[in-house]
Image (cartoon, rainbow, N blue to C red; front, side, top):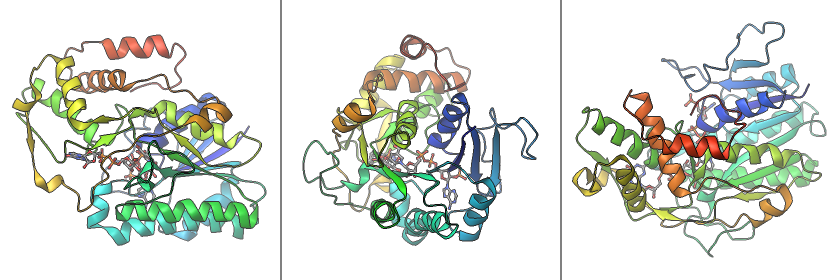
Length: 352
Ligand code: NAP
Ligand code: GDD
């Protein structure tokens, strides 16, 4: 049985990845950090027993990307075959407020993980996945963006992830570590963090429908993103580590849409009508430097990993709205559910 260690297992991607690996028969270990409130809502349905019951296949451990000793001792104890480094302060706007913390967790945290592998003498035994990002392209140097496009990050988050990207590549070249960067474009789901724009909109609509809120307050509505569906994206992480050779891959849908288009689709689907009646722009959500438009070219992943996303923009909006309405006990239009049933008859995740 293969063993995987996932940092950031309580996040959107970590929770899906844990379920995906469990469906492949892995023994899965996840790192969570101590918080003053419960932070395991996304993985509660797969947590078996933190005391390592015989036969259990999912375990979680306390650790932190800012604490090298916790990473070293976990890797030494678990001896994983694969490490997926997904932990990060992942909010771009927040990174302008906490640049030092973001750099510590996202840049140096990645270095700590790589050093732990090297110092334990495990560079030839462990495969390593780094959660790289389309934020590296920032002020884009060409369109669409591929593995060959030069980087130009536009936030402390982007800059920290640039370091993590290059240090991962460096450990691959210097120590022959099987290390891959997945350059993932935005991907969303019903598990998306509630302060990212797509989820803020779909959750806001559900609250308006439930009579709990009257308005949604947003920032720059003209930005455009290449949005995909998270479960499909975590599959690519695993696929990268199953290749003969470690490499870097862009994962994207190849389509781009603005926040306004997202609002239009979402309000149309729920029958609330004109989104402009419900949305106000609040400059608090503007960023000191913005990434205006991202669109990815994932031909390399298509060719080498056979990775082909099935969920398009309009599907994604419906899936996310259905999930948020259901959470508030409101009647669900159900087109999102139908899309999921049709496109993933054997889906490996238990809830959206
Ligand atoms: P997310 O939902 O924000 O999850 C981040 C995870 O990292 C959470 O489990 C969080 O723990 C954990 N974490 C944060 N700081 C930590 C620290 N100092 N030590 C240990 N754990 C820490 O992010 P996501 O959307 O799943 O994204 C996963 C990764 O992919 C991130 O590295 C992100 O930057 C990157 N990425 C995401 C996208 C995207 O569109 N989603 C695209 C490209 C790259 P808590 O639950 O306790 O907060
Ligand atoms: N969060 C947020 N909140 N964004 C808003 C809002 C708002 O109220 N209003 C407009 N936006 C705009 C942002 O200015 C940005 O241009 C766009 O919506 C997307 O913002 P986010 O959803 O926060 O995502 P992101 O693109 O900045 O970052 C996400 O994707 C990256 C990959 O490109 C995160 O998941 C990063 O961790 C990830 O690396």
